[in-house]
Amino acid sequence: MRLLERIRKEWFMIGIVLAIAGAKLEPSIGVNGGPLKPEITVSYIAVATIFFNSGLSLNTEELTSALVHIKLHLFIQIFTLAFFPAAIWLFLQLLSITPINEWLLKGLQTVGCMPPPVSSAVILTKAVGGNEDPPCLVSFLEPSWEEISLKQQSSQMSGSESVPEARLR
Image 1 (cartoon, rainbow, N blue to C red):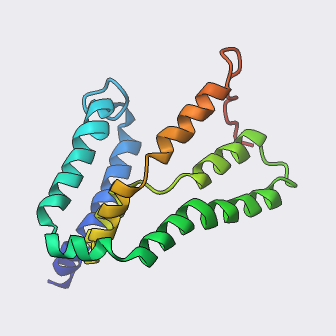
Image 2: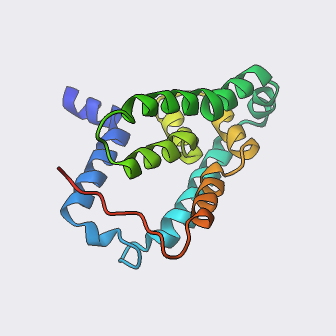
Image 3: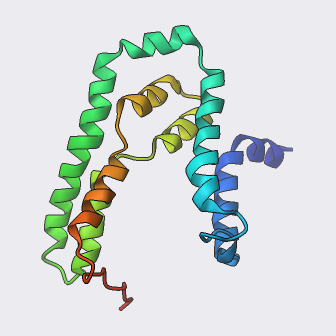
């Protein structure tokens, strides 16, 4: 019976592992244009469902009390938009003296400057029994830095320039 209790407690992580294993076994299901239509289901339906579900469970008094935690919101913004990118930059300075592919380093720098997906923060906070009001508020206070960064990168690349394929050594 302890195994069943453990499974009930860790259902989210087990689901993530099963989804990754399923994607490894049959990747064609999740490709753009595939049966799951991730270009629609992930971009619109899944994110909207996550926020709708979280919104239904929010207590308005808790939400307004979370709004006044200015120090918390400043910490989150500074950590995700200043400290973490600076730490990644320092790490990349160390990696730049190694023979690692230049495009891999540029990719790491790009990912290091983007905040984590807010929908993931809401789900993971809820899964561990935390207060999901701050992640929901951050999602409304923070612009979509992922979209801004990707748009800037795509506008900087000319039509003849392309990212080389990664090669395993």
